[in-house]
Image (tube, rainbow, N blue to C red; front, top):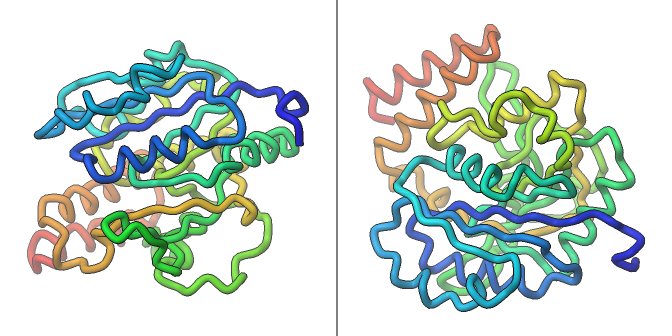
Length: 280
């Protein structure tokens, strides 16, 4: 497919915090995309050591690529800052985690899927696990979209499973994993609120955005032809997750159901109580 047949400008936003290992790999994959990236903005949110950022020559030498330094304002607010700094662009706006790596044709394919599906606000695909220290894929699924259990718990479908074609259908998703969001820029421009709710410092901001977009009548589309890699190393052992992050995730789940009222709020309150009292 020729780039002229696609006809959509691409804008990439990467918000990072202490990503010295992952960010250079992420940017190297972006450099190898088969279609031009019109603008790319990396936002560093208060990393404890920023020297490595100054050594990333591609951020200063490539036209349209840039770096923005700020204090640790949070993942959602960091993305909002970058989006506004780029002038709330149209085309395709990609919110990308620094530990997510794209094959060379990913962005071209994502644009094509958006063009083929005018009712989709976001397109997503399969995220496969990746170990950045060993520089290899894990062979297991990280996410094929975010789904909800009958009692209210949100989870990444397929996480930990060996990929064997079990999620091979194009379908609408309940929510999209925030590690990689390919969004229709015109939809974001029409939103009255910020793209990401600033009340969510970290965790569940992707689900909150998904619920708002669906409530406005837009689809969140999963296309298994879109395949990328996501590190998410902390998922290996929940006991290694700092307690403050567990509390933040549980607190934000309660906040999610307060903003989007549902009987699932009971599950979220019980989960928060368990994390606080039982130190799960």
